[in-house]
Image 1 (cartoon, rainbow, N blue to C red):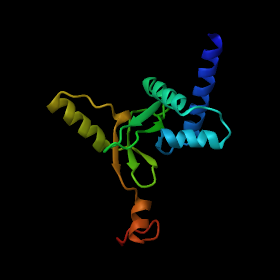
Image 2 (cartoon, rainbow, N blue to C red):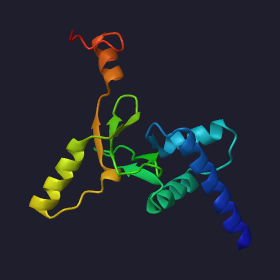
Image 3 (cartoon, rainbow, N blue to C red):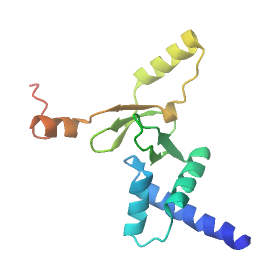
Length: 148
């Protein structure tokens, strides 16, 4: 029985190490699984799923449920951040960006005061298309938004 606990701890360490190395983006279970296998790790897909869900429960990893039956995505939470902040998730490239903006706090205050609901800003994710992907789609070089 002790052997199984050690095994689970090692698998969880591998998953967390992978999440730390890719902290700038959300990843599906398959992406985490493929990344670990690409590094030679011997771990099952179900074990990756269980480890990620345990890390979500512990507040170390954020989970974003996908729409229309697509796979959920996971990202390491920056536990060193002084204040909770939202995140912007690019639906094209998968990168996540911190949303360190007073507008989110104002929105959270409004929702609390007028709707009686407290928003967990550390888990707030706004989905859209990042500037780089938008420019790539429009054929505009990076850093140029067409507004001079």
